[in-house]
Amino acid sequence: MSAAFDARTAVKNLLRKTPFYGVAKDLYRRRVRAAGLFDVALLDITNGCNLRCPFCYNDWSAVGEPALMPVERFDRVVQVFGLVRNDGVAISCSFEPFLHPQFPELLARIPARYRSKGYFSTNLARPLRGGVAEALAAAPLHHINVSMESLTAATYEACRKGASFPRFHANLEALARAVAGSRRGPALHVITMLCDLNLREIPELVRRCREELGVAYHEVRPFTRTPANEAWIAAHGVTEEQWRWLRDALDSSGATHCNLLPLPRDEGSTHYMELPDTRFLRVEADGRLALGQNPRMEPELETHLDEIDDLESFLKRWIRRHRTA
Image (tube, rainbow, N blue to C red; front, side):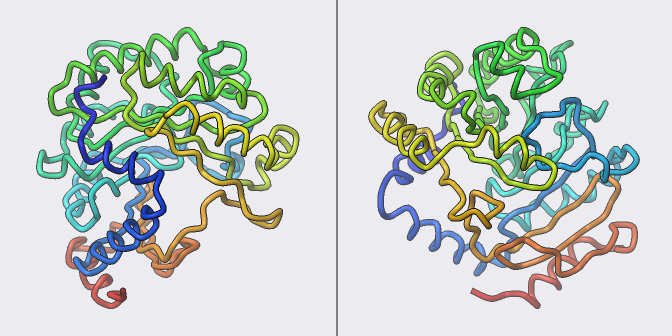
């Protein structure tokens, strides 16, 4: 078991299986609001990806020119991490952070006092060389999300178009070893997208990730449908009956650390989650800033970091104007 497996994650894993979880989440959200904090901060330090997964919701024809967040801009954003709830700062959201040549160095610039705030998500498809795994395990982060659909080479490479399974698996094992050996490092989490290609493998995948890699939390997600991926999802999405089979299989396995998210409620739904009213900020690699407070996470204010002299004061003023329970 990873040394970074923390008591708070263990309690959340157990509570998630009880009828009280929804109540506890609502109470926590109210505390966050009362404290004048953002629910989430969604950052991206790049605007690209090294893979072209068939289920990806991004329309790559609309992304535009490649962008990397400069160190100075990253430093500005880090200084307002204190305005976001714990475990609420996504340092990569829609794009692959390892495309940034200074990614490990950027993580090292996060002050230790914000250790409980942030995480990043990665496909872990690029080689981890020169002590990078150890640097990630020492980063002041809450956890690291690794995207993984399978530990079978053919299934993995079908889901992660452009990736090499041997390289990914070597990276994964190196990162798991480094995290296990880190006394105060981030926990290791896994995100698995659910489809008919990996459905029957998932219970075993969850078990192996826990036992062999020390994964503290494993989330299994249906897809977010967009025009970019709807044809593939129509061909490979799971039925309600298949979802129930997986739910029962995971429940009977005792995998309390695994969270199987629900299917969209109806054919008109594009997202697997019914979000509560969410106060968010989003920062793109090119410096665009969006703020909002609504269930669909639609921007209510859009500007650019270069237009703001004092970012912390600007955000605090916005929060005061939107301080509702």
